[in-house]
Image (tube, rainbow, N blue to C red; front, side):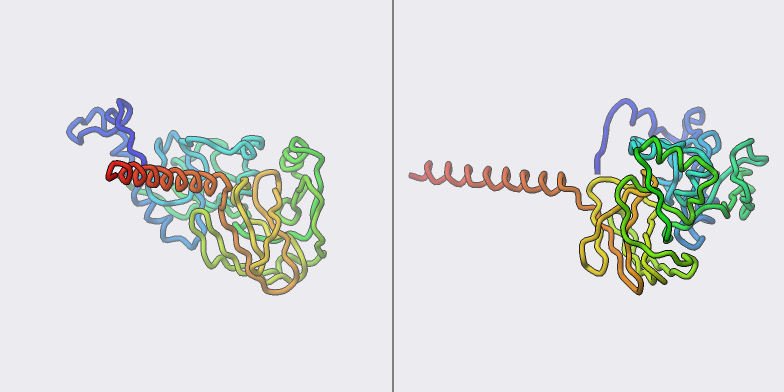
Length: 282
């Protein structure tokens, strides 16, 4: 936990008596019922909101996965795409939208249906039926020459991204069959860790709509597996036919190297202190 005591923090944390500076507190109260509704929906839930409607990090505040918001940073592989396009958000499994009434042009994706209306904020929650599942399989792979070619293919409506994966590296051996017969169950999903039980009709690529980033490791039936950079943005692993357990863990080398250096420094300091005390005793 990092506490930053500065002029920015002291300005943002205001007294409730300062009515002219509590606009965000009012917004927090007004969207509480929307958060409660989303928290009751079957997981996984990933929501998009217009900053003009909810001008704070709604997802962080309520513990709901949010696409967009006031980001401290965003990985370059996401920025390389048209991040706010409907097609890319479908790929990222953004399955709920919060919009005003009436919604602004371009806010909603095609086929979105209203599932909740807030009488407090007059905002409406829409379910995006076009969003891809968070976990799915593909049995068709398209190879792109570079990152620009990947982004171009993602933008093209002619390629069905639901059934085809785009890679920039040699494809694993897969078999063509109907992906609708494959079954998946997320048994554990917390920050830095995802466990999935998979039943594959034939060998294919398991796609998890979470960001591809160095430091992630994968295992299929406790055996190390290569993580493919699917669509230049999200993670995927090759899974053979049958029932298997797929595990993702975030294990960056930098963290372990830093921990080793910190522990070494601590031990060295302790050793130096003990040596000094022993010398003084003599």
